[in-house]
Amino acid sequence: MLMSLHTTDICQMADELKVTLTDDQCSLLLRYARLLVEWNRHMNLTAIEDDAGVLTRHLADSLTVLPALDRILAGRPAPRMIDVGTGAGLPGIPVKIARPHIVLDLADSTGKKIRFCAAVIGELGLAGIQAIHGRAEEMARRREYREMYDLVIARAVAPLPTLAEYLLPFAKVSGWCIAMKGAEAEVEAQRAQKAIATLGGSAPSIEPVVLPRLPDRRALILIRKIRPTPNRYPRPSGAPRAAPL
Ligand code: SAM
Image 1: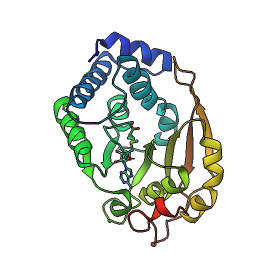
Image 2 (image 1 turned 135 degrees about the vertical axis):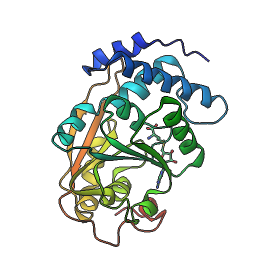
Image 3 (image 1 turned 60 degrees about the vertical axis):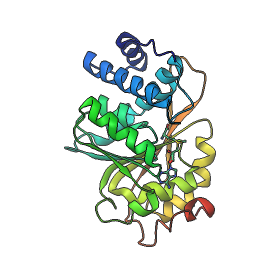
Image 4 (image 1 turned 120 degrees about the vertical axis):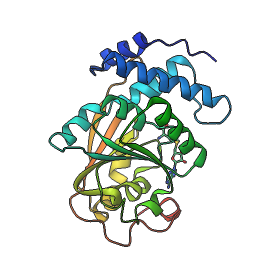
């Protein structure tokens, strides 16, 4: 296992992203990356575990959302965010380290991934963050989560017509959803227009993002919640994937 990364590598990557981080934040990101690689030896958390991959495809990619997130959350004190299908805590944990004032829920349907996230929270001593084991379709029907979030985010969870039904029910009216996507963003956004409107979202807008050191195209799909989500959504577990709106 490689992991010869140092705090300076993280700080340099942050500079390339034009994200300002303190040395302490870079050091926390490094500790998170080390835990990810360490746990990955015993359980399958991620296919990417080489130094360059962890640095760019996990840490840097997660942080590309910060400019849009800062804009959306400006003026919202103690904003609440949920990372749906967070897996090993991506993008949620890097975002929480970079923006500690956000109150963050990490949600995933796979128990071992949530156990890892909970261990990271404990090891790094992060406050105002919890890891929740659950399916989006079930969680979003519960009063403590439904329409409670300023920002709902997901990376690599499902195509947008399905993902919209996972994400929009969590967002409060006037809150936002961000889907972190690759080259397929525009096509997905077009295909999901009807689903998004049905679920109370605005027309999606696409914001290209640049990931340093990689040629891959990346984009954020931003959706504003403009109306409450009708009570019949999300449909029961499995339905959004089996029959997208
Ligand atoms: N977001 C992480 C990342 O970018 O590395 C993980 C991506 S992984 C490909 C997709 C994750 O979504 C898995 O951990 C899976 O358990 C979770 N997931 C899929 N459908 C879900 C659902 N309906 N509710 C909650 N989690 C879900």
